[in-house]
Image (tube, rainbow, N blue to C red; front, top):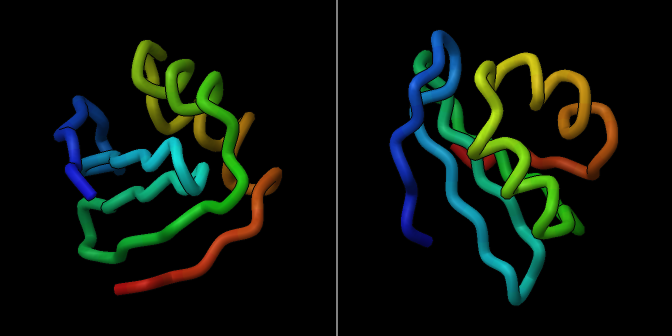
Length: 70
């Protein structure tokens, strides 16, 4: 999956696979998480949000199944 670097104090890069609706987030401390069944609009909202961390906290972290993959 192609990861896009983002301007965030906590998130290093974000990737999205629309076919599987999987959102991948790489954090600056090195961990990588996958979030499952994430709609395209959530990814789009994250990418245009002024604060990626605030958006993810409000809309993604607790709302979608996740797994740490690295």
